[in-house]
Length: 120
Length: 107
Image (tube, rainbow over all chains, first blue to last red; front, side, top):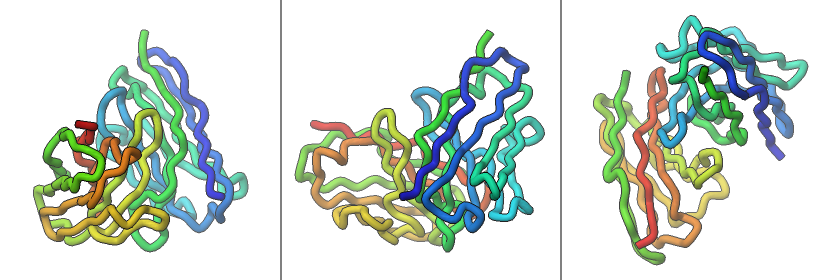
């Protein structure tokens, strides 16, 4: 069965960095586009970034462009999000999500999320 | 950016009721509209994609319609497990924005 498991969240001070990992299993990871989406406590969903199946195409939301970097290692079935220059407003649950193969930017499987808290 | 607006923000209903949630985009997104359900403490779950296609495994009491700028999600007969928050999301162009959510509560 398809599984996505995020890790790497935690408490960090403003200006710090975190690297999130999403471990995928139960499907051919290298065939799928993947995305990161976050949800601040008690708030709605915010799409952050996607990466193509090969890693050759990447797109970011303006709110994280230049600070966050998405990558993947298809040999390790893993997706990453490097988060730098973190701000208190980046505090959120971070989800990785798989895209439907025939309907771009539509997310059929989500991980359980990893919580990143930015606070001094 | 494309702005997505859901209405209502919250509603109360009873088991067996028929409920409809509306989502409006501030520009034409054709049929690139998805609906998700999120239960407390859980990840979102895809219900409907491309406005009206039912995701595999989702009960047929859920349906979606619309195109262009106005879309609806309908639950034909509410079940206890349907009390949750619902989000629309446009997949037309990045950034792939979500609506603010509609919280469906028990009356």
